[in-house]
Length: 73
Image (tube, rainbow, N blue to C red; front, side, top):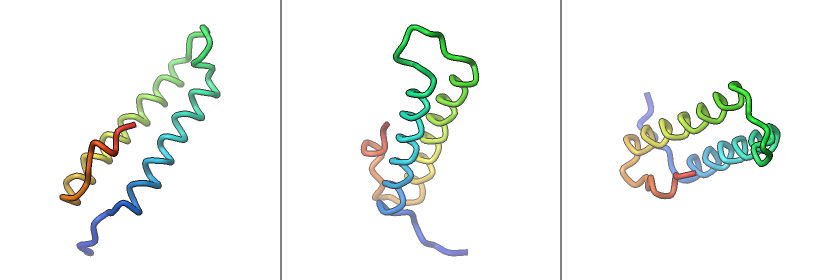
């Protein structure tokens, strides 16, 4: 088992991907309009937020130099 830690070169692409996926999904499900979103859309957005938060917690444990304030969406 490797003792390699995640670094900014890992965090930044993961953060950017999650942020992009959330923005893309919001655009696709018309969150800007007055049309109610479906339960599936809501589950997707909440799930992506939860995944992001949990990854941040793991990264913080893995690397003492991780800055959670930079990880916020």
